[in-house]
Every structure is written in C-alpha cells, then in structure tokens.
Amino acid sequence: MTVDKLHNYTKTAGLLHWLIVALVAALFCVGWFMTDLPRGAERGYFFALHKSLGLSLFFLMVVRLWWRYRHAPPPFPETVMPWQQWFARRVHFGFYVLLFIQPMTGYLSSSFSGYSTKLFGLMLPSWASKNVVFNDFFTSVHQFSSCLLLLLIFLHIGGAVSHVARDGMATLRRIRPW
Ligand code: HEM
Ligand code: HEM
Image 1 (cartoon, rainbow, N blue to C red):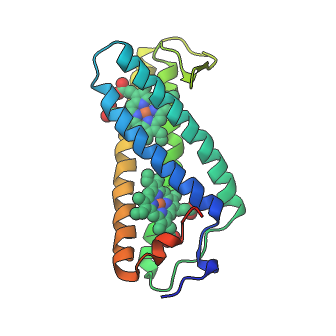
Image 2 (image 1 turned 30 degrees about the horizontal axis):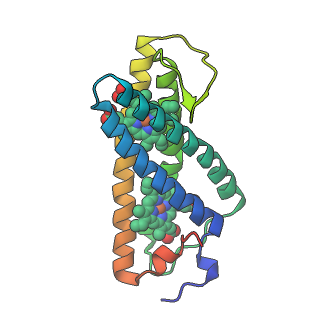
C-alpha cells in the first residue's frame, strides 16, 4: 500500500501526538509511584512533578484541540474497514475528552486538598480552602478516568499494532513528527 501526503497528519499534529504520549506515560508512572510513597519530602517532590507535568499536558491539549479544529484529520487508508474507522474515531474522541477531564479533575482535587499547586515551582493562585468531600470526589473521578484512559490506550495501541502487522510501517508514518 502506498500512503501519500494526503493520508498523513500534519507535522505539528504528529509532534503533539508523540509529545503527549510521552507525557501521559510519565504521568501514569509518576502517579502510581507517588501514591505508594510514605508522607515526606520524596512524596512531596513526586506529587509536585506529577502536577506540573499534568498541567503542561493540559496546555498542550488546548493547542492540540485548536490545531485539530483548523486541520481536519487525513482520510483513513482504504485497507481500514468502515467499522474500524468508526471505532477508531470514537477512541480518538474519547482521548480528547479524557485528556481534558484528567488534568482538570487532578487540578480540582489538588485545589481542595489543602496543599499548594505549583507549576514547576511557580505557585498558582489558591482559590479554594481544604474540603475533604470535594477532594475525595475529584480524586475518585481522577482515578476512574485514569482507568478509562488506560482502556482506550490499550484499544488504540492494539489497533495500531494490528495495522502495522498488516500494512507495515505506513500506518505509523501517518502520524510521524517529522
Ligand atoms: C497515551 C497514548 C496515546 C494517545 C493518548 C494517543 C492519541 C491519539 C489520538 C487522539 C489520535 C487521533 C489524532 C487526531 O485525530 O487528532 C491518534 C492517532 C494515531 N495514533 Fe495515537 N495515541 C497514543 C499512543 C499511540 C501509540 C503508542 C501508537 C503506536 C503504536 C499510536 C499510533 C497512532 C496512529 C498510527 C494514529 C493515526 C491513526 C490513523 O491512522 O488515523 N498512538 N492517537
Ligand atoms: C492527563 C493528565 C494526568 C494523568 C494521566 C494522571 C494520572 C494519575 C494517576 C494514574 C494517578 C494515580 C491514581 C491512583 O491512585 O491509582 C494520579 C494521582 C493523582 N494526580 Fe494525576 N494525572 C494527570 C493530571 C494531574 C494534574 C494536572 C494534577 C494536579 C494539578 C494531578 C493530581 C493528582 C493527585 C493529587 C493525585 C493523587 C490522588 C490520590 O491521592 O490518589 N494529576 N494521577
């Protein structure tokens, strides 16, 4: 199968895709690691790192959404069956929704936790006082949506791998960052 330029995402979309993939991977690793740490300086350091990476991801998602709005995605190659295209579009849409919900609930849970929220050392305005009910609620949504996100990631990678197995690297080149 030949995949011409018309079938490829723009370089900016490719760059944003892979930057966000790297950030999501780092956020999961740090998120799981930090919650098991005992209270202390190390836990504080990784919480602050997680919050800074998550807020950076939020800003990148704003750019990504704006870019997506201005640049329609390329058509799928003919080898992708209509039901697979339908499914892939839903998964992509789910990513856009969850990658906003995830940092927003993280930020809200942090705001009601009684701890400060910093962006790489820069103190963000604190507009809420400690509230256990709100903190628990946003933490639960944050945890639940991280599970949904993980499910979508498995489906998405499964789809990508099955297409690579069938059509070769042309599938991955559709979204390369260069
Ligand atoms: C955190 C993990 C990931 C997220 C959140 C993610 C998200 C997305 C989104 C939202 C799109 C649609 C682009 C758009 O319409 O704007 C997309 C496309 C794509 N992604 Fe990912 N992705 C992830 C990981 C991966 C990985 C690991 C691979 C490769 C194994 C991959 C391969 C692709 C490919 C090939 C496309 C183009 C789909 C097509 O053919 O239309 N993605 N991804
Ligand atoms: C897409 C972005 C994000 C992802 C993928 C993510 C993922 C995760 C994961 C996997 C956990 C561990 C959940 C568990 O206990 O099993 C976690 C916990 C946490 N995240 Fe995030 N996060 C993101 C953004 C943020 C942001 C922006 C903030 C705050 C500004 C934040 C604050 C927190 C906090 C405070 C916890 C600890 C909650 C607890 O006590 O269980 N997260 N996150």
